[in-house]
Image (cartoon, rainbow, N blue to C red):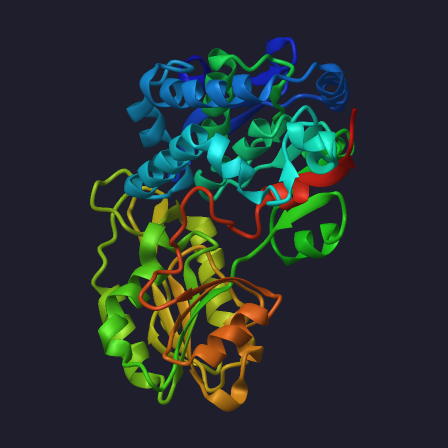
Length: 457
């Protein structure tokens, strides 16, 4: 059986490395799919040192290689898998619907192809990107890296976040990626494509590790990016590691707007991409009685079918039954005291093969600042509550995205001024809207780069 499994080996600074320690990667039914090699701490230490020693690549060379990698990623057989086989495997292992996987891989390709544009959108208007620019003859700000090596602890709930760290490569960083054990296929394929496109083995590495060695990756880097929950955010806030935590994205409908005119966008914001992303809406607040809106959302979400993740019509995420039941127990415990319009008796629908669909849940809150409004779960789970102008912006804080359906310009001003709201979408725009060149949670370049004044003869 082991001989039939997909081999996912580390991609070190000297090439592929087959570690003795192997981890079996299973699909949502528990069936073995791949073997992931876990490198020891010493290998990590040496790999990170090699990245620091490696020479840089010219900007034009980096941008051209990223564009070539996008083609290789989608068109060539990598690690024995065609692109279609890779996408199918990701869906079966992660439980993310195949249509969502395709959207995510398109985003990765788009990011690679447009990296020369997107990565430099964070550059200040008063700065230049090269000290040789004629502007420095009279004195100018130059946009420079804060280090040379960038480490990524990748997320496993969705392939999409792998589009972000490509910007670090575009800006001239050497990059080390620790893949998630849940979904290591995307970074393995992407880094293989990057190397085939012209990035040296000492420019970008894949380091699957255990938890002890994972910390060594961050210690060995100048800057890092880590995905996780609130504990991760608290641990790394203000450090040389940028934490990416829960999104807690929201929708607000004020009294001058009829939610019935925007129900499609509201429901789509909740359920798009299986509800697994940080940019899915988890809280909807409305000026007035939230009951009719909660009922309408529940009616729409209840009609979504339960299907295996590789089914072309699948919308909802799938997990091993045991994991799904644990999430269900957590939800039912935390939802106590709310009114359930959908999912009050449970959200798990078993598929009969060891896996289960996480079906949508809609709960009505009695106030906008209820504790439940801060709960974000990896499926379409939404908290619908009342809001009034007297409540102000306080219930809307700590939102990655806020879609606000309103005619109140002054309210939009206050929302933009609120520092804990990262993105404000006014009007009929879903919370998941994003494209290369606009910030996700600020520009990554704001974290990776700084300006220095240069004047020369």
